Length: 120
Image (cartoon, rainbow, N blue to C red):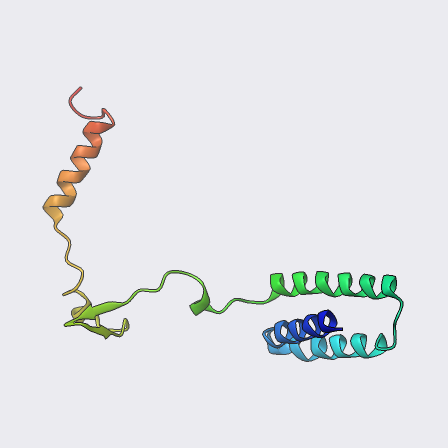
């Protein structure tokens, strides 16, 4: 019973994260399927239904769009020990991202020599 409840809650949670046009139909489908099979007590049939629900969970995980903040690299800038928001103006950002062109060129030539493209 607890497995059934946890699977049901997981399905509902995943369905609520779907886009609005698919969300209502998916929620209704999940609820009607669980209510339709509420009185089943046969263990083999119950395990088949739970396997089907698990495969539906896998499908919903695939089609659920991920939030942008959940994936990827997060960048933070600190100045004077305090966190600064990333959406600064370009002129303010330039102070924090200084590149030395000479060092980059030196590194470039060093890599070319290492790969035997220079000094032939």
